[in-house]
Length: 364
Image 1 (tube, rainbow, N blue to C red):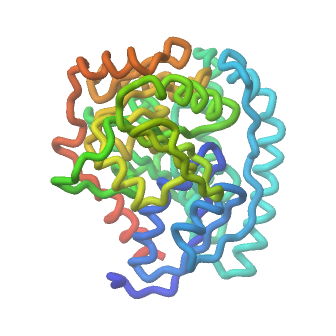
Image 2 (image 1 turned 90 degrees about the horizontal axis):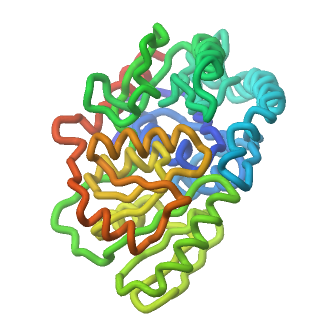
């Protein structure tokens, strides 16, 4: 039932860097629909497939992503990204031309851009969503400071900047979203997760493995897990992170692999698992925090943001983290069983974003 009656048309556009930007936009889209808005989505490939599956009634407009290519070896990750900056800049210029045309054609009233830099507009409100005000790189120092200045230059072209985290000391993103100086139009909107906690869910799995992220590292982690899990006496579900290609396979007694689960299925699987193993992608971390799950984090090699988050949150006691280069599943499970996990969300409002979205829609 809509809480606010409006005919506002809102365009939502996630970044094509893993599936996390698409999945974390799902609760925002639900809230806009609850407010009576007409929502359009712009995406391509697996991001479009995922959002079309979750919202079959919505129009998905084709828009090319940044199509970043990733290094085979983690140590070359940062260099590979830097080499593609000219391609990213050309994509941003294309976004600007595309947006002007789409706003006129569909009479769009507002844009929500999840970390895509070229979707600002002079005549309508535009929101930039990011948890990375400080962009981590393997090089640190002046390169990170320069990237932050460039980042802020783009963010300041938008009407508002929404940060999916909490203000104050109890937060998930560390210095990524809590730098010394914030953009002037910033709002912390809390934890963005499509999942809902429930009590007394029957346990089905000792371990839930969520394989995600860019290739080739997604496949590298998948191979490691499949090679090692067959010798363990555990019940486990492996979700391979490949939407649009349904497949179920029994890997070993008690161990099942699926290519993809929709939101409600994955919500149920997380609640029914004792332990989760995943990348330290930020959206996954918000999901884990929302459901108050224990987890083993394997940061994507070379991806400085994930490495930082894994180390930061392990130091906080929220999750157990180790590098892929040192990963052994049996050893990791034993170490995690001894780790003194702390609960993240003891005093947090996990629905803070709803008020922000409602106020935004009312302002249109």
